Image (cartoon, rainbow, N blue to C red):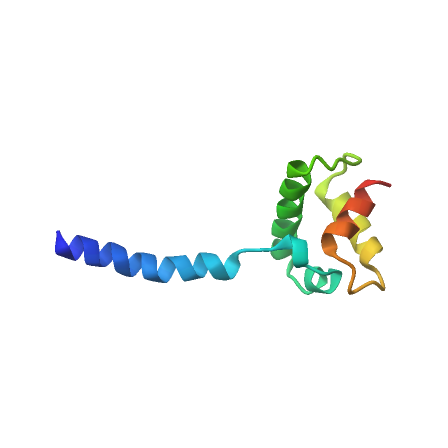
Length: 94
C-alpha cells in the first residue's frame, strides 16, 4: 500500500508541472506569440479563444478553422503587439 501511495505521489509530482507548463492564457497572448507557435499550438490557441468567446457570449460569423486562421493572421499582419483574442474577434466580425 505504501508503494502504491509513493508511486502515485511521484507520478503526480511529474505530471502536474507538465500541465502547468502547457496551460495557455489566451487573454495575454499577442499576435507575435500566436505567430510564433507551430500549427498545432495555433489550433489549440484558437480552440481556447473559442471557449473564452463562448463564455463571454461573443459571437461572430461562422467560419471554418482555416478561414478563421487566415482572417486572424490578416488582422495580425503588422500588429505584433495586438492581442490575439482581439484579432480573432475582429476577424470573426467581418
